[in-house]
Structures are given as C-alpha cells and as structure tokens.
Length: 219
Length: 219
Image (cartoon, rainbow over the protein chains, first blue to last red):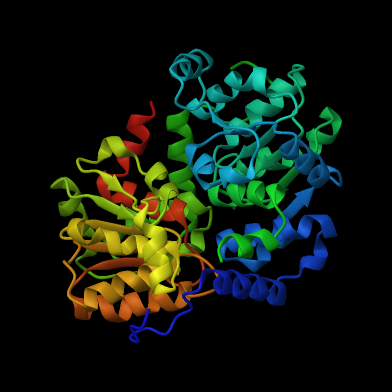
C-alpha cells in the first residue's frame, strides 16, 4: 500500500505485536495469576480497555481445565451466534454449538416464561459433560446454566461467564463466582456490567492457542 | 420458571424495559442530539457502559441518512462476520454483506501488504453507493474505506465507525470525524479505543427500528 494519505500500521503481525505490547505496558497484569495472563491480554485486546483485568475472576484450575477440554476436542457451547462467529474455529478440535435458533427454543421459552437465551441452555444437556461453556450475552443463560447444574446436569469442564448489561449481568456473574466452586465447575468471568460476545470469543481463542500464535498466523 | 434458587428477571420484555430504564436513569443522553439518543441507548445497552455516550460523535444528518438508506433496502457492508450475526436481519430490507472470507481477499492483502480486513473493503466498491457501512472491528478497514473515498469511490449513505483496540482505532475514528464531512459522507462513531462488533451491530439495529420495537418483538 503506497497511499500516503494516512500514516497507519498495515502489517497484520506488526499490528498484533504493537497491540499486545501496548497492553503489557499499560495493563497491570500482575493482578491475575500467570496462567490467566494470556487470556487477560486477549480480553483486553477485544474491548480496548486495560482496566478490564481488574474485573477478571477465575478459579485456579480454570485455565488448565479449559485447555485440556479444548485439546481433547470437547465442544464449545455458547448462548449467541456472535460468539460462534468470533471463535477461531481452526484452533478447535471440537464443534462450536449454539442452540438459540433451534425450533424447540420458542416453545421452551414460552412454557417457562423466560428468555430464548435461557431456553436454549436447556438444549445443551447432552453436550454439557466436559464442554467449554462460553456465555457472551445473556445473564438469563448463565442463571439457567447454574440452575441446571444445581439440578444435577452433567458438569462442563469450565464456564466462561461474560454476560453483559444492566439487568442480571452483575448478579449472574456473582452467582457464578459463589456457586461454581460448590458445583465443582471451574469458571472464568468478568465482574460487573461489562462483557459481551467479543470478550467471550477472545477468551475461547486465548485458551485454544498460545498468544504467540496470534502473530504467527497473521504473517 | 418456578425454580426459586435465583431471583432474577426472566420476562424478555421486562428485561428490555428495565435495561432501557436503567440507561435513561444513569446515562446523560442530553449530550447527544435527540435523534441520536435511541442509537446511544442501544450502544450503551450492548456494552454495559453508560459513559460511552460521551464518546459518541456524529454528523447531524447521519441518523436520517441511515434510516432512509435502510428503509430503501440498501445493503449493510461490514468488516466482520460478528457484526453480520449481531444485526437483526428481519428488520432489514437489504442484505448484510461481509467480504472478509472471499478468496480474493488473501491475494489483495498480500499484494498491498495490508490486513485482510482492509483488503476486504476493496471488494465493496460495486455495493458502496448508498450503503450503510458498519465497521465493527478493524481500524485498517476504516482507513482503507477513507482512502477509497478520497480516490473517488461511490459514496455510502453513512459510515458507522466502531473499530476497537490499541493500534489505529483512535486514529482511524479521528480521521473519520475530520474527513467524512469533506468527503460528503455522514458518519456516526465512538471516539477512543472502545468499539467492537456488538456496538456496531447495535447501531445498525437502532437505525433499522424504533426502540419500542425491542420490547414488542420480545413479548
């Protein structure tokens, strides 16, 4: 590209390197355990906010559990198509499953008087054992997942809880932090209202490959 | 749903109403023009951050231009699949187009020494006239779009600029704010590093329907 009108970095590998360098410079990554830092960097990269690292909360076994599950080809279960689109599928051995558009969802949602996102979680049961769950949008999906686990549903390998918003996001993530250990399921989450599909997808991508891969793949 | 373990709002319409009420309560929407407020609410809703309203910048004609273009069935052009997934397509009369996975993209990116996201914009030319452009990820895509417009490419109806991150996001959005008026193209953007596909999709969704529709559609 020789157009000199705008002076901007065009080389993909250089952009990644410079982005990650800026994050390492500005974010206090020391507030999270070492094995969580690559995920923290990817989540910060996805949202443009270095202070997000302070809201990360995780079970000490979550990263290793997630990496093992993905390496073994277990599925990624997600509440929204946007997460499925944001996940770099060539890094995964297993499928990414979003049940939100299944025809039964409307019926379950109507019967239970709940959201379609929560109803869609009821369709995860037979895929839940050992799976990586990535909630990238709906607090009700995270609440429903916790309810099913209390009722004895199969244990996923890890829950990545990144619902976003003003109603239930804070509360569902605090419930995750409090109850997931009792339920025997490792978790990674971002406290507060912030979250969303880009962060959830970034978390999955971080757990599916080392950071160095980002730059290499884009050379 | 009668499970009493968690006390949370399950009714979709009530969740939307309560979310929008919280945003109206907490966000200083008076800092943006009245016709931009429904979009501001949707963008805030997508990211969970009320202070985002202070970073919104827009041409005074942008909202009406975007609404007219969408009503006329002009396409939505986007840099990432995640935006395409987040757009509520039943509200649109035209298609949502993302050229990122077209086979020519790798060749153009390699030839120009740029990102795939920027290269994909080169494939928009024949669809650009009158379109709603929604950049939800890559600063290089926004820079490339501005370059093409400087070179005389067909004018889109509006540019929704929501690239995110640490390298080029700030700069590409400032370039948009400065140059779009000279280029004769209305714009809406979010200053700073924040942005992303969820906000870009929320902006499109806001422009494609009045806010009241959110609640009605989910009853």
